[in-house]
Length: 117
Image 1 (cartoon, rainbow, N blue to C red):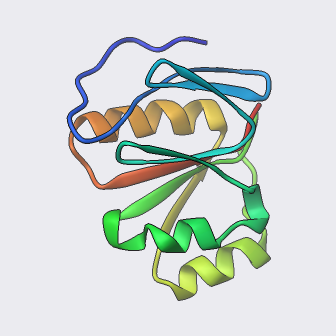
Image 2: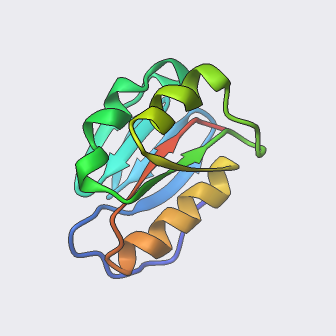
């Protein structure tokens, strides 16, 4: 799927997604990714909380794309992030990508961690 163009100043947009891939700022990435500001980082999924804790001072919350459908976040993933006082907003990956784009284009301090569809 491809998204409509939006203005971005301090962030890169999620341009599209497909099976096991994302297009972010015109570049293709395979697998799960973390997008924060102008950085795109390969993300280890629910076992990788460290990458999310490292960006906590740069964001107000993190949108978690849970895959093709909305899913509950595992307790083992949620607990260390809640202990680090990081707000989490889980949603299906397509919705997470669109929501991130809107908020980032408004200049909000938000990151998105996306599991592929």
